[in-house]
Image (cartoon, rainbow, N blue to C red; front, top):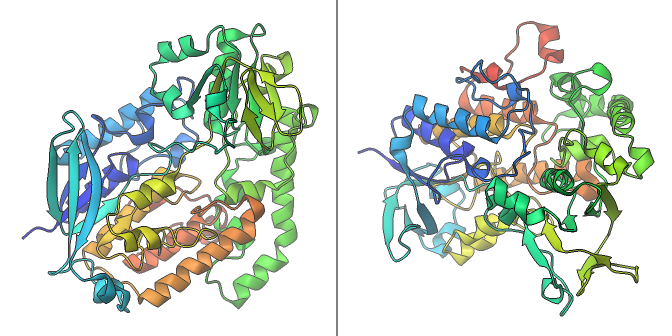
Length: 518
């Protein structure tokens, strides 16, 4: 009998999980709350484009069509590409659209028995005759209609950047309720159609809170709509090394950070003495690379002129997965005054607008858009019905989500998480993880003991903290994607070295095309 695999989410990771489970003879059922595939690309800001250069953001066996000539395709082009992929591999028939998963419940061993296990699932296998997952799903077109499914394995592809907005907390009477205007989250802005979004900001004094990609894109749209008559104010806490392009001083960034030589400069989880010694010796070069990129960004964006030079290094930014591309002309808008940058370590609301900590005069505004991110951890936690699983999935508050190979929680059987941990190229990373998971399901290899997996996850957490510093952000493999992929390859029995020749292996950048076949 075919093993049934529930895949929750039909974004990039969900499509990949579906494709590879089918290729191994399993029977996937994909639950998607919306009526379309595409995940975060379904609703976005009009000016948003792909963050990652196109060659690094493609399926290994399905290149971009020749008709897409832009290096950074827009929303429609990305959605068309994902739709083409789904049609090419006949994936849509496995997807239940407009079906929201309310909860998942493990049916099998008791909590006490699971806590006594030394191997994942009690025996180290991905499937169990005793254990099943019960998936409760709701028809989003008819919310009174729910259905229950029993499956052998669950792959969570719910992502981190959607559905549950991160709203800052404020003291009583100093939150949005004290303000006379509109306060929305960037998610609400992105959910508007393009014309409605333009109408929302047109003719208004708009304040955008945040300084990541969404915040900059929204600020650009506000400045285009209102110009100097109603400048868009951007409130931010931290300056970031957002990049104008991926060619610092004419050198492609991938040659600085996406090859094996660049990874020799970084201390790696599980490295031996020689690699550790080499990373220590090469530390000055690591610093020089970072300064090289920083100087290019400073010059091109005139950061010193605007007081926007970050206090941390570019390497920290990379290892925190915080790098974003600056919209073209963003700092020209700052220079002309249609975008005003305002540093605000903390703020609160008042009737007239916003009060920045330490300042007496409020910033008068008509509308506030909170581009303050999402609570991906809460979404991941809340899908479990079991209190034990809710408590263990996130780990301790000061550590990364404790996933072995960024995919498997050692204490949660018959379940994988794909797309929660970030990298410099998320599609590429999700594909490798989906291939690893399906090889695991196909019994190509077995997992080590629970304790060994927990130790490995802890090593990766220490790496993150070492190189991200106070900008540490949970679950990001940052600048070690080749080292990470090597581990997946070794598990699957693949040769981790994918280039031809010593120098090519050392200096050529790695990308999706290097992993087309085992």
